[in-house]
Image (tube, rainbow, N blue to C red; front, side):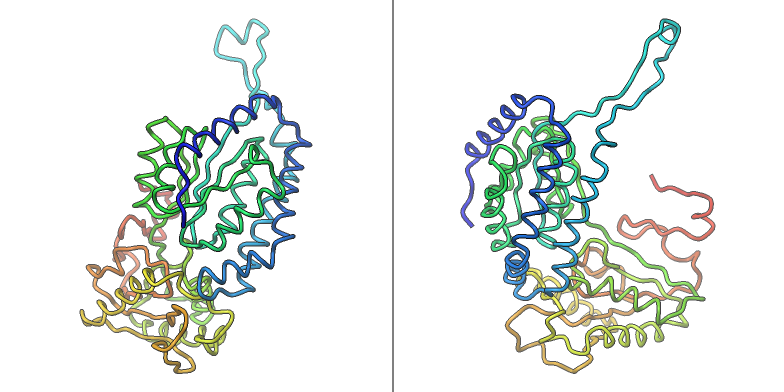
Length: 391
């Protein structure tokens, strides 16, 4: 993907800010119109966006893309339109402290746009995580520059093509490019910067933004634990867990990353998980609703986790209802894979997995579950009720 020069991006930021200042007060009507145009882009180009995402992934479920990236983006934009006037309304405050409250002073908070907001959107939900931030950005009266992921080049190029059909470049612009463009984009003098992605990359983004004292909002990855209680209805539990794990083939920050199960129910959990998968996906390899891993790099990373677990003696259970041969495929699909009682030293227990692999560990007592695993706080029921907060 061709890089965009820093000079070109810097000039665009300055032009957007100049136009924003010239505009003055951004009325509710203008904000609502911009939100409507964003919705119009999604509805007009729905089919092309879905096809572009599928091309980028090698294969991506059409139904999933329509749900998560199209409908999932329209919802926040419509919600912003609905609440626009309320959000813009000044809020009264007490005039204190003494003696101002004795001198007839009045106080209020007036909400004003920041100016030019940068958005660095990720590859796993490339449309949703570009358009959803626009709900707040446009509702607040801001201008926006977007740097989508180079891992989804077809989708990024399409967004760069369609935005100019509905927005002037001084309202919203899309700049494309690889790591060099991303690094330069992070260092631009925005009024605010939003980044969604890996923690390792976020460190570089925040460091670059700090050079201009740009406030940064980060939405990063982690390891999302699940604790299954002894009284759980196992089939309902695994239906929910495997639904979350297999959405977008696990390439979502909300996917369960590892599960704690009572020791005596470990086999039951594995068997129930297999039934849950089979109900949703009787076949996987050619199933149009089962999404592929984004690219070869991530495919190799994920299969590396599985191979390491096998070599270190972990019980690896591949859930493959139709017994298909995944060695012969045009995409990067991986069958759902459970790693039972893995050692905490394994890489799969250290990294955010972001794929259809699920470590499962047994426990004797809830109180014995580690209090913290790689930054993820696990609380006992007593701690939850006591309001324990990890600092």
